[in-house]
Length: 112
Image 1 (cartoon, rainbow, N blue to C red):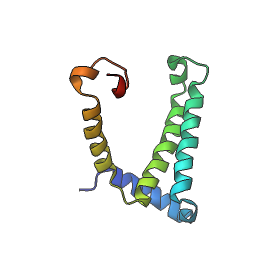
Image 2: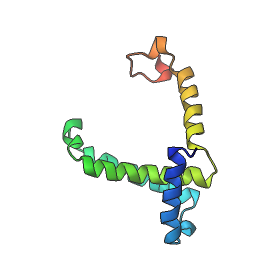
Image 3: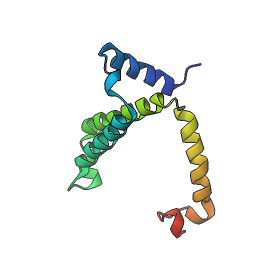
C-alpha cells in the first residue's frame, strides 16, 4: 500500500517533470526555498495576533503547502523516507523531552 507521503511526492515529481524543472531543484536550492517559503508563512503573522493571522487561512494553506512541497522534494532528492525520518525524530525528541519533566512546560530541553 502506498502511503500518503509517497502519493504526494509522486504528484509533486510529476508536476516538476512535466515542466522540466528537475534541473533547478538541487538540495541547496531546495533548502533555501524551504526557508524563503517559511518566511512568507511568518509574514502572514507579522504585526498581528495569532488570531488575526489565522483569519488568512487560504494564504496560510498556500505558504504551508510551498514549505511542504520543497521539504518533500529535498527528502526525495536525498532518498529519505519521510515517515521514517519523522519517526526517528520523535524518538529523539521523546528522550530530550521526557513527559515527567516537559509536560505543560515550554522550556527548551537544556533548561528542563
